[in-house]
Amino acid sequence: MRALALPLKIILFLLLLGFAAQNSDTVVLRYFLGLEWRAPLSLVILAVFALGLFTGLLACSLRLLRGHRELRSLRRELQKE
Image (cartoon, rainbow, N blue to C red; front, side, top):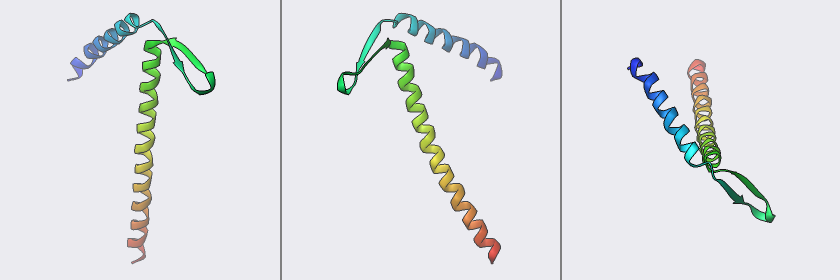
């Protein structure tokens, strides 16, 4: 499995590089109050992906912290008995 990891990473990198090269046209994102952002399409897609990844990781970490807190309180209850 490890022998396949590097070639797969290289192939994925080349595919993403080709995608970025093919989608280098500038797009305009318009916000409220006349604000706008001009950037290459591939950069916009990457930014939206990163924002989604960050949001998902934040949601998971909050759930994990809640679970750790509950586990800690249950362990304290067991130690008291």
